[in-house]
Image 1 (tube, rainbow, N blue to C red):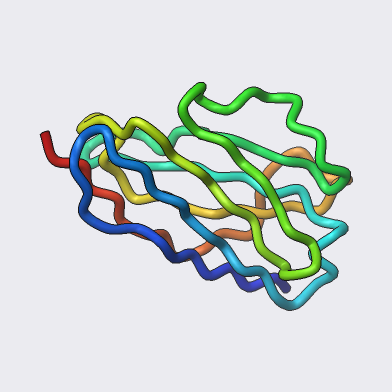
Image 2: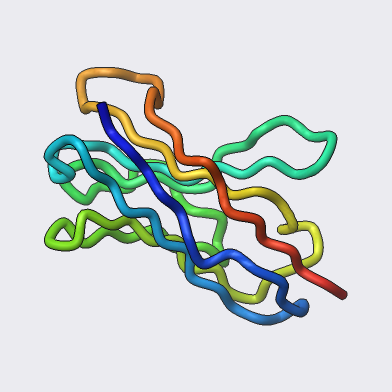
Length: 116
């Protein structure tokens, strides 16, 4: 089992930046592919960014967002710049072992609210 705990969300103004963090425990972090997803009210959950166990990011982040990881801290980050009101959502950290295609470990989410 893998436990994921997100932090760093909050209320910001349009144009501000935020960095989300997700700390993983329970399994060797360096063996996990990590991702960030988000879900806005009344919308489907959508992919934001991913980074593989070997630091590859085959799927580009959303331009203003950058994913990174620190294996020494068992942490994955999502740097979000030039935030817009439409970025308002609950942001979820997710993990999977590299042999699987679907993310099967999920955090509880952290709320990001961007005011105009």
